[in-house]
Amino acid sequence: YTAELNADYRLLAIDACVYRQDSSEISDGLFAGCTNLSSITIPSGVKSIGGDAFNSCKAITAIVIPDGVTSIFRGSFYGCTALTTVIVPSTVCSIGESGFCECLGLTDVYYGGTEAEWNEIDIGDYNDSLAAVTIHYESGSFVDVSKSAWYYKAVDYAVENKLMNGVGEGKFA
Image 1 (cartoon, rainbow, N blue to C red):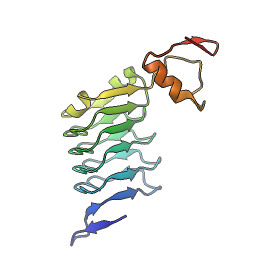
Image 2 (cartoon, rainbow, N blue to C red):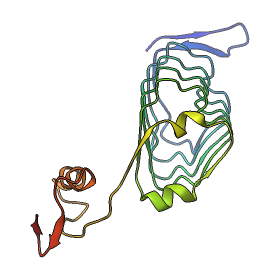
Image 3 (cartoon, rainbow, N blue to C red):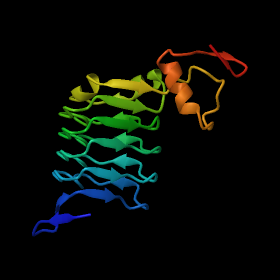
C-alpha cells in the first residue's frame, strides 16, 4: 500500500487499506478526499461509519459493509463516483443525509434483509443515488434451504429472479 500525508500528518492519498480489527467505528472524515483509494476491508467489529468517512474517494468501486454496522452517517460515501455496488447488512438502521449522494455510478445495492426491513431504515435526505439503483433483497421467500447450505445463494438468486419456487419438503418447481 502507498500513502501520502500532508504537513499536519493528515492522510491525503492511499490506494488500499485493511482497517484495524479492534476499532468499532470508522472516524469522521478518515479517508475523505483519498481519490486513489480503490479498496478497503472493513472489519466485522465496526458498528458505525462516520460522517464524510469516504467522501470523494473517487476510485472505490465496491464496498462491503459488514454485519453489525448500525449507522452510516452524513456524507459517508458522498461523491464516490466510481462506486457501483454496495452490500448493506440488515443490521443497518440509519443512513445519514447525503450518505450516498453523488454516487453517480451506483447501480446495485445488495441488502441482507427483506424489502419491508429496507423500508424501515431511516434514510436521510439527499440520498438520490439510492433511489436510482436496483436493490436486491434477501428473498426469505422459501424455507426449503438452510441459509448455511453451500448452495443457498444460488437458490436465493433463482427464487428472487422467479426462475423457480420452493414448494416444500425440499422440492422446487
